[in-house]
Image (cartoon, one colour):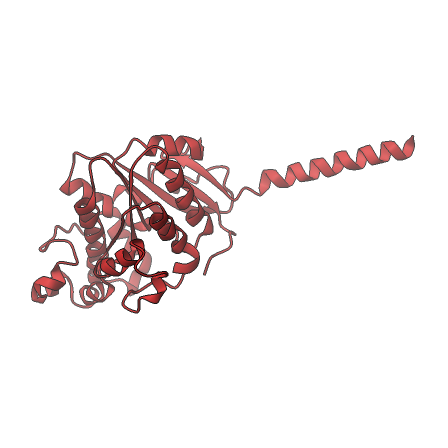
Length: 287
């Protein structure tokens, strides 16, 4: 009898230990813009009513990449979708289309396309899903070589560009507000390493992504765009240009943050976006 009691007590202790672990090993938690906990299901329901969604990611975060694919799968059950991403530059759209249309087996086989180092692990699943379900996938980012020229010489250097080069970016001259909070924060965070031209290069990326999102948007579709979270945090960046150029569409944003704990959003992370994905800061990085 005593041995049975010991077994029962041992099992109860083990169960309590497992429960304790589960309470502290939350990989992520989704919050509303006011810092209230919410669920993936509720987020999907709300985003399904929008026209354009900006999914702000941390580029090396596996939770983001998993949720992006799951979000697309869930929304595709109710909406026609168009996908787009910062990770593909506008002059590579033809190569991307070749893969989507089945003309090449792997995007990596096209020597003309410039892929991010973590493409295979982090973005290929989404691109393959688009191909398998015949979804448009839009390359939205300005070619990096042009952004680097702006970083060195400012927006005025674009006046010397050919019409062909200009076709791969937002129409010029483009609006630019250096007083946006996120742009001013770049100068503050990077201190001596930041310049006004760096902010201009960031704005060129934001404007170009916004331009190609709107250019490829269709009224009977939901456009889901993947970008670094800083490009749409605080309802600025890409969203600032989207709202400037088209106020009639319904937009929603997702931001991603890392915290030591995920059960409560820190004050500085409240209000970053319509939905904030809070990930444990010790989460494994993909690269």
